[in-house]
Length: 146
Image (cartoon, rainbow, N blue to C red; front, top):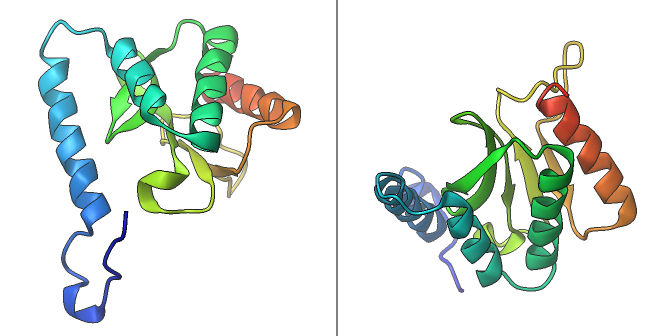
């Protein structure tokens, strides 16, 4: 998908990707009021992905089920997101979503990752490996306080 580069003249407007994410969020809020299964929405969103994004999202979803089975999930701005109760703790932003070279595992402020005066809240994942799985499992456990 070709997108327009932002300039100073249009710095106060939203990009096509940002507008699409807002539309997805509005749709998610409408679906949340229905009786539809949020996990089905997540699995459908993952199924739409391609290549590394899909492999990472599938592996992440399986890992969450393994290390934090009590976490819920839903889509959030079109991303697979995982939560404790109703609060989103982390999400996976596919590379294709905003045309980046890697997918991002992002943590919200409810994640218990605090580490002194400074800590990361997002992690680049270009591909899923055994080493990535080990690190992400640790992050998930820490984030939920397990």
